[in-house]
Image (cartoon, rainbow, N blue to C red; front, side, top):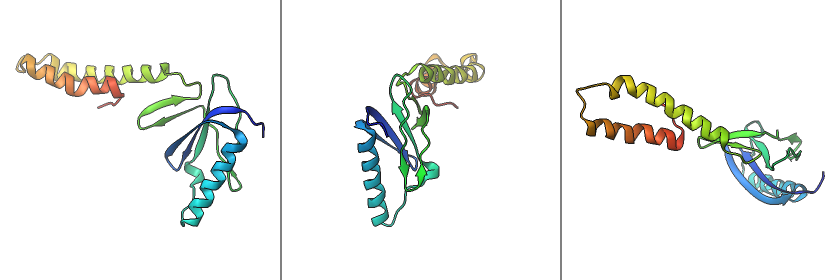
Length: 141
């Protein structure tokens, strides 16, 4: 393994762990210790649900393994609804949120915006409670 100083993120069984500015060797040792502690507590790391990501502007290979199984290294992942990329860029996440908000607005347009029966205050309340969170957090209806 090449010992480089990078920012790492390891997703173990669906929970993300940020391990910043660790070298490959140190990261593997830490992962080994974590796996040993899990085993001592009667737990195991689910390698089928685990992956790793190196946060760096250029593509860098970092092979991590749990026991005999090598964790796949991914270029992007979604955690708590947010899209992370290995380059640390947010353009795709911003585009995704705008797309989700646009879909919400299309849905609201026919069912809320053009309805004359609804007051302006009611429309604004619906807009603030549905559209704004969709744009802010990227959730869809």
